[in-house]
Image 1 (cartoon, one colour):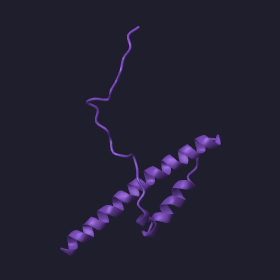
Image 2 (image 1 turned 180 degrees about the vertical axis):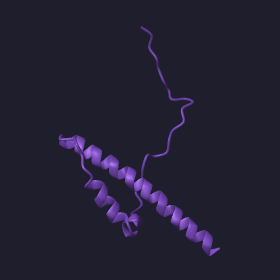
Image 3 (image 1 turned 120 degrees about the vertical axis):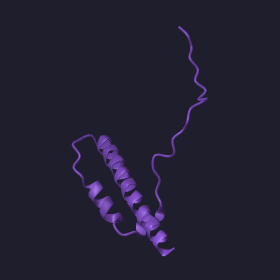
Image 4 (image 1 turned 135 degrees about the horizontal axis):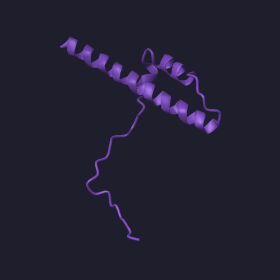
Amino acid sequence: MPLVINFGLGQTFKPSPSHFDKWWLEKEGYREVVHRAWNTHCSYTDPLDMWQFKIRFLRKKLKDWAINVNAEIKKGENQAD
């Protein structure tokens, strides 16, 4: 049986799947997004599965929210020019 070795050459790496900016805590709408995402119904019963579902769902919702917030900030900056 042949041995296959992958050194990762030629692979492109994606940026980090998510990040957290602490200024979000002060932004209007942040707490509501977190509250709604965390309280979304989860059909899993295993605590670990529930945690993974909730944290992934929250990450997606925060990412979507942050895109909109950043767009509003840039729009405001462009209007100020």
